[in-house]
Length: 317
View 1 (tube, one colour):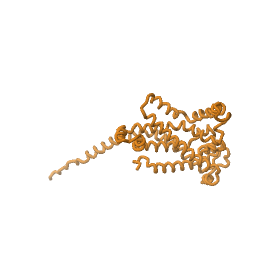
View 2 (cartoon, one colour; view 1 turned 120 degrees about the vertical axis):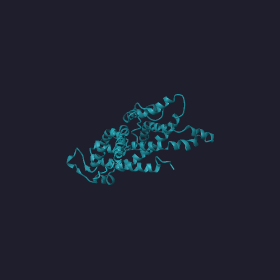
View 3 (cartoon, helix red, strand yellow; view 1 turned 60 degrees about the vertical axis):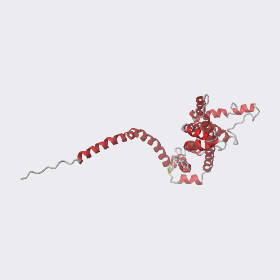
View 4 (cartoon, helix red, strand yellow; view 1 turned 90 degrees about the horizontal axis):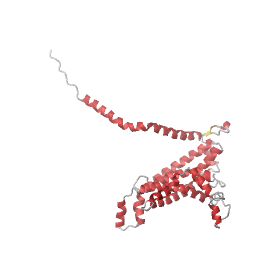
């Protein structure tokens, strides 16, 4: 009988095993960064997702700890009340829009001017930058306390102006409906301008100097250099800082709450401040959650429209 001829083992199997081992060893380093940040990511998700979902849940409830017999499922009743039967919602929303537009516009203009100034080379530039940026390090409550003292009718600036014959003694800028808005604007400008200056200055320092030198050779003046070189390069920084500051100003509670408490006569009550009064003072957490949900949707919609119109991250064309 002829002996059976044994065929040689296939060469593909060792090669396949080697490829699988290489794939596993290559995939491990790629997964390692995600595994390292997973605990922090899960922790942040818990701190963010739980409050957001809780607000959405309570917005559909009647929830007042002081009146537990009225608590229960409300459905869309809270939202219907907001748009049809709330005498304060539209007024606070209108003032919030006014506050954001005025504050962000002025902060952007002054911040851009300061960034252009401290970007120049001059003696004491480091000290100048420190002085410009220092108000941003002050907390909102401390900022409010500073300006409450400055606006005090007995010891503040109005007393010294009265000594100079400008105004009357005992005048309070924060209790007069004609002066409370400008006074609050100035107080928030002091703290908000450095934010724009910091971000814009960081982008200004990345603009190539060769472009300015070439523009000078071509005879371009300072205005043309700013419009055609500086502004296009810092465009994304302006868009991002404006969006962030608009969201923060819309949600501004600490400064106005400490300065005016929403007064006088509700003249400075923003929507977030109205939400704070509804939840903390009136203990109506269900209705306050519905107001918060509406504010969230408004901010999300406006942010998406703003980014779409500004073409953030694009070439600006």
